[in-house]
Length: 259
Length: 259
Picture 1 (cartoon, rainbow over the protein chains, first blue to last red):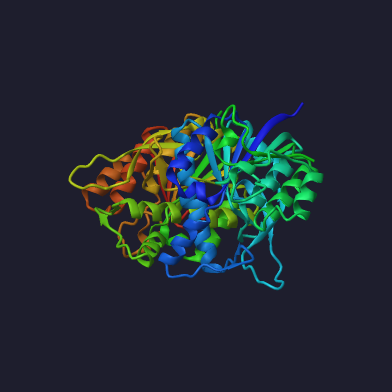
Picture 2: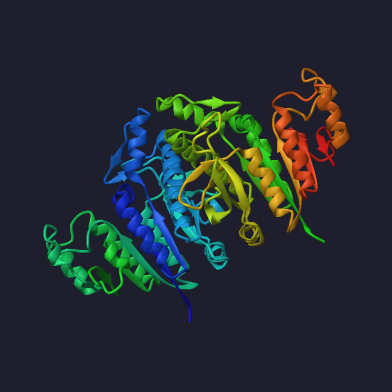
């Protein structure tokens, strides 16, 4: 039987709010290992860009990463946010190991081809080095991945953190029974986005298709859920979406996706 | 017999000069593992500080690290410089693993007590987690350490990169036969700083004392050499000081220190 592995992606709003972040990190530190944390850090990057006189650029909800923005993304994601999380986890006696996709050659990607939009130094994941990552886990470390990959030719690339989390979960499901958690400020998938009491606690593929058809699943959630079902089809055991309730004992107020 | 381990510290001037840096990284990648790279990144940090409207502060050749400077140091050292080096090494097929002292709890430090000068978030090394670092080496990775440590209580600290290199070499000499290399723009220790032909190729303790007495060893070199001899006394096998010639075959134009 495969060992269980939890892969948790936290959203930018949790990172920005120190009280929420500290609550989350205490829950993460208390979880059974092996476990992996994945984070972005979008808002902080925008703040630093503005301080340096650079205007952040977005298209279709994704960052356009020119050379100067990539430098700032590397500084903020791999530097400030990653090391702050790692130092806080060490204080909670969780032996965290901050990583980008370049470290240990863990995640290689290719620069996104220029189509209608030139996303610049944005990377689409090609491969996950599952052996290196499981070696790191097996020596007792908990990887903390920022949203950066590399092309194995010296170029760092900016990659969506949700995608990194799902690709890690898919890749590592060859060696572990993987559970993927998307933790953000919402309690999960809601029937009515303005009413938190309308939380849907389980969604399977059939239910998902109905929700999409009925227009219940909103724009931002659509690619997220699509990626979750792809991950389940590719071997991930469980996907959960919600806020800190995901990690609280005797609290089932979140959304679980199943095939 | 203990396995050999090389610990190489590169200076800021090599990091700043892309041609020199690429030459160095090719030589580093070609070296036999196990090996560890240690780097600072001072000038780049000053550039970013200035871009963000913060004036860098120094006292007695050391950075004064207030809160804003620490943020920038973390962004530049652990982010921009560390990940650029790691991505370049991966392209050279060297399986690098970028780390701060917080990662894997590798290097703990204490905030320097306030004396005549308040150095702010500057950390003096307390302990090296040799088991974790050797585990990382043993799974085939080459650690690349930036000049940051942590206090094991959630606080990141700025620590001199020369000191990190010598403390790593001392700590790991319990498990490896360690050689310490300080690689910078000078060919080594010179009798006459204006004449590179006056390179001193070997210095032992007696010779060192004479050179200090005669005033040959200049201000900047004095603490560096003092630390090197301390490292040798504490179990480091060899210390070498020089430029890229340190890693070139059939080139002995550098300074070797012995007890």
